[in-house]
Amino acid sequence: MSAAEPPKEPVKYVDATVRLPYRYVAGDYRATYLRALKDKTILGSRCARTGKVFVPPVVASPESFAPCEEFVEVADRGVVTTFCIVRIPVIGREIELPYVAASVALDGADISIYALIQECRPEDVRMGMRVAAVWKPDGERVGSWEDILHFRPTGEPDAAPATYLDRL
Amino acid sequence: MTRLRNVAVVAFAQLPTVAHDPHRTSTEMLYPVIRRALADCGVERGAIDFQIAGSVDYMDGRPFGFVQALDVMGSWPARQDLHLEMDAAFGAHYAWIKIQTGEIDSALVVGHGKTSEGDPRRILNLQLDPYYQAAIGLDPIATAALQASAYMARTGATDADLAAVAARNRTAGARNPEAQLREAATADALRETPWAVEPLRTGYLPPVGESATCLVLAAEGTAERLCDRPAWIHGVEQRTELQTLGARDLTRSPGAQLAAEQAYAMAGIGSAGDADVVELMALTPVEELILHDALGVDARTAAARVNPSGGALCAHPTMSTGLIRLGEAFRQLAGRAGARQVPDARRAVVHVQQGHCLQQNLVWVLGRERRWT
Image (cartoon, rainbow over all chains, first blue to last red; front, side, top):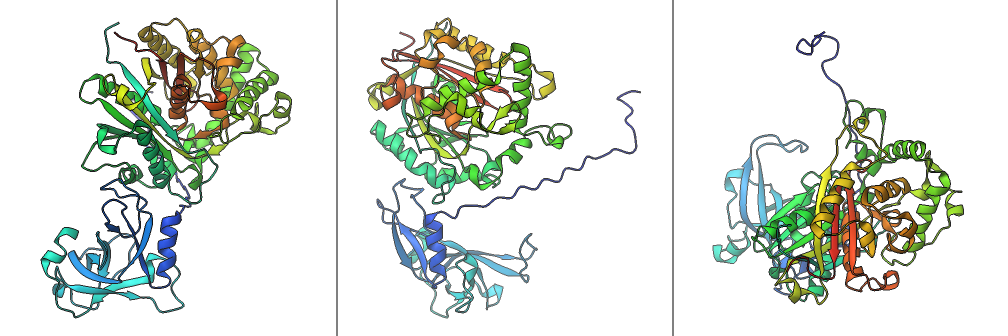
């Protein structure tokens, strides 16, 4: 028998189903942040050197390398700083297409978070648009990012670009 | 030997190794350690030219998880960065080579890993080939036991010999506040512990642990500014053996031996007998006995010089265990080893490994004086 003439049958593939379960530590910072969401409160942490507020809270500023040990409350509303209109299904998410994924700079925060914008037509979303969180009803929030269903337009006048251009 | 740049370890910091840190993620554990190492050097993050990390995404359970560490490494303005899916001590070797090129003068080397979030034995089973070895369920303890059986058959080493090696490490570990096992144990007591995988007892194996580590390397001219007693690197070499376990003589470590010979030649020493301190990354007593042969450690004097830290048997935080060996050598040479200080330690030999049964080996020689003038 020659290695140049492999058998056609029966072995063509070797199945190896790998299952690796993990249990991630939330960490004290993330735990505090998630717990606050249950009370419709969004927390950030303030950089000891620059004063910048990071949401979600981080232990250290990636920019200044200084610790961010002070927790501060930020608003559950802010401004759309960039967005895209998703028209292809995303693995692991069941959302009606098309939908808008946006970067939202919350009032009081120096970096933006990612959020879905709903309750408006995708073509009406724009940079500078004011949006607010739509929370799950009382009694249904569990301390998870999913406690915020999505963001929706507030109807306020658009923010001037100068107010958010450094938070893109 | 060609004149190389004199490069030194100038700082080392670690978190005490624990079974499980419930308060912090892997990268959150890393941040305070980097801060402390830099504070020891008296500099800000911007003073260090290069950074390299050792971690395993499979341990942390997140593809490309290593990039998350950048956010706590002071990586801004954008830095030169490298990541190795290996123990961070191998990253230190890369950093040493990069310093030799003259491109950089200093490097931050970090190790991190959240071993407690997944199943390390299962993950390390996947390190083996998926067709024959992984498929029958071999894990690092099983392969180490195969190695132990073969070694005991070849050399006549007994269960009592293994217990004696383990007990010596455990006794030393009791003096190391950053070890995970800090209770001394006698050989007799360890021989009463149950089999993990026969012929290895649970008392002969490291506990699963996690930590975070940071070491700073700097070249001559910079090192003196960062540290009053740098530990100068005199020699270093690494060698990797075959992946197929059956193709190797598991009772010997030609990879460690070759790496040691080359590192000793670079350092201008004859054997590990010329060192005051030897830190071996042995994950079982049998691996330590094999390394004694490979590195030329005289077993009769081992008690006073080998693993004053307690070694890997007392703390094995994956991806940091090797960097801790290097950090311990620095502490010994700098006179910062506390209750485990070897008096007037002037030269150290360090061994680091990765993979099953001593597959990849890295050997360092360090000293109080500069190697090249």
